[in-house]
Image (cartoon, rainbow, N blue to C red; front, side, top):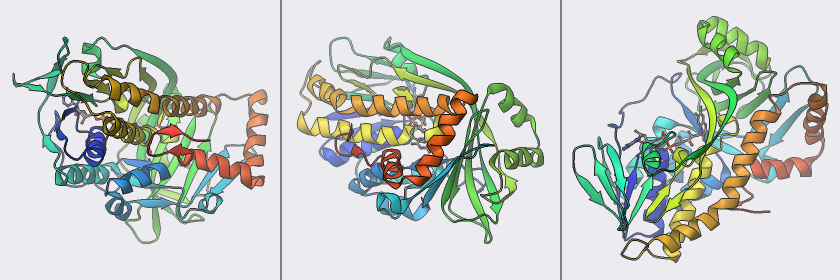
Length: 404
Ligand SMILES: Cc1cc2nc3c(=O)[nH]c(=O)nc-3n(C[C@H](O)[C@H](O)[C@H](O)COP(=O)(O)OP(=O)(O)OC[C@H]3O[C@@H](n4cnc5c(N)ncnc54)[C@H](O)[C@@H]3O)c2cc1C
């Protein structure tokens, strides 16, 4: 079987790795438009991804977890609170009988580990190679390359990111939901603070703020990856502040539990639009990653979900090998959809709810919300159930299906 992956971002590489693991004889080629960056950004300028426990077990299955763990920070607890309200909750790894609730790794490290491991396992990575079209007129798909060349494959995985050019070319439209939020991402350095390895999730009138622990780089200081979601007008104001003003504004919003904010790195910002492709499979074609579903980063689920999608596709291809001809992959792709539908629906819905519920303010919403947070801290079994969902433990990793 020949598989071509368009887009060598973290998701394209993960799909290649998953398929190589499940179907080792497959010939897999990843085509990436940009030359991969070498070297590391300064410690305060990197971007990071939180991995849940289901992702840990998949990366372990694919033989890459040990290296990932060496570069990641453990999330030992998650503290959830609402600014100016009485409720707060602390979920700890012991609640789910684990040593960590999740892990945070910088994207440049995760990306290069995925690339290295994929290549070590025989995946061919070609960059810079831009793909400008895919032809699927009755036969197996053929990719049209920007340099004029063509590449035929039994299966094409389109992982070219949000606003996918190739999905648009195939006439695949998307459901878009504008959540009227903009996210600012940056790394911050903190002095003091209570505990090691705590992820701080703070809900404010304007939107949620997350501080995720990063591996430490300076003795006596902690380093966090910040995702600050705010109404676009407030985000524009925050983007205009100098570093000292930005840190003061952030300190006012998050309080002092996490410690004293002392430095911030390069900030970047995105308008947050939830986009889901209306079709994810066509004969010989799968749409994956951000091209299939771009989620609000508040819950840190986009990449985690894509890893489960990748595992499900590998399983479907293992069960129902692709045969020659135009519809040779359809049985496997229908199985893929069966395996992923409920997990995608649940994850997308839960992320939307989190992004919008905690944004709205008013007495009717505040009271139940505060009560929910306070109750959560008092009721360990409920807390355990919620923590398990958040860590992806309720997901059957091998199939991508949501568990009970
Ligand atoms: C601020 C923020 C924080 C996040 N935090 C988390 C988190 O903690 N946990 C989590 O699970 N998820 C998180 N996410 C989501 C996660 O980052 C995405 O799910 C993931 O990066 C999607 O990767 P991708 O490979 O699909 O897309 P991309 O990273 O956009 O990669 C697409 C690749 O395709 C290439 N490409 C594009 N067009 C072509 C073409 N025509 N030919 C060839 N190549 C092409 C591009 O160059 C690029 O390399 C976060 C997202 C944001 C914005």
